[in-house]
Length: 197
Image 1 (cartoon, rainbow, N blue to C red):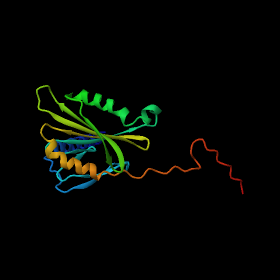
Image 2: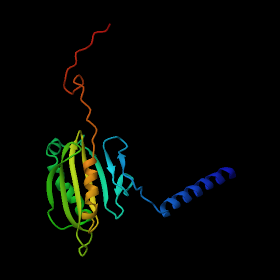
Image 3: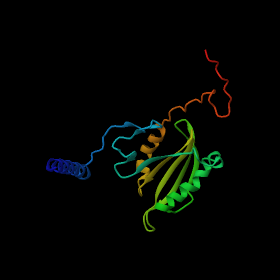
Image 4: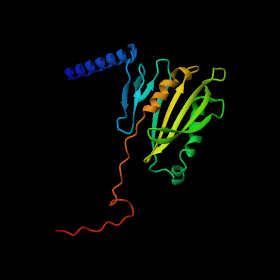
């Protein structure tokens, strides 16, 4: 029993020491660009030099934050799915207003990302009322039965500095080809019974 307690205490102590070293240690971002591949293989993009990727988010040396949210549309209302990306825009505005003070209507345009048309929504924001203006930019589209929401949050004054790196992320974005449905298993199709041999 005492041996088990000692081993547990040793594991807890080592784990605590490792976590403290990671939390307190200085992170040096890799200087070279590299490819980020989402763990389920639903997209890839090139991470700019000196950006750090942690928990799926890419952060610039000065603090711009690029993130991706994938939302399943499997159980969504058909009208919502058919209306994308327009139906997502009010939700993105609402989500942004929870974290920032949105100071204008923003701009929208359609752009090609990874071979599909996405809606770009750029919103001018402030963290607090007296802060300098910064911006949040979204790219949203349906791909297969998922909604992809790409987002960059720029701290005040960094959109011009980090904008070229973000443009490179967007230009390098790749979706894998969607699987082709098997015509014999499509919903609603009657498949003739194969006679037994």
